[in-house]
Image (cartoon, rainbow, N blue to C red; front, side):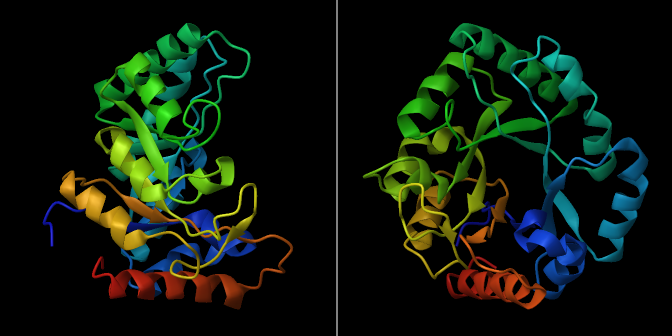
Length: 256
């Protein structure tokens, strides 16, 4: 068991329409870390107090890093006070190139990375098209950006959602040197199939995922992300049970 392995967190959005229960139930489930949105300035004090009340810490925060903006550095910098107040070092973002020239995007991501470097924060880009779609695309982006504070958020289920004929563990093995954070999400493996159940109820080989992370000495946060099944009616009991079942699965894998 690696002493360097990362903390296990829960992404607040796993609670869907019952996000008000997220902090309380995450703590009840035995976790001590969460992934939250970067709070607005007028919400920061209350967020700090709520986390402290439940014995939680923000291991990552979902921020804004809009590569379509020439002032991306200012956008990222404006969020840094929240990271300082919460002692958080990881900014989760989703970025899409769209019709922008690739080099323009790479330059702007380096600008954002420089802000991160100044504040001790790493920007982790989600496994989304069109910059981080799969291992090949992510490697191209990471090598072109070439900044130590711009990295990848590896999502174990998005790879199947956005790609056909891939293996999550093998994909991770190719990019692990660039992975700063992980979303632990299960899936039935279907292409563009919205089927994200509790961990252990799908096809993702989480034992294999952790083996690759441990071999690489990964020490970043791994956040549960439980997005549910297409067409289901979410209830508070359902979302809480799904988090609890996922924690139980991770305990079986000796990750908690």
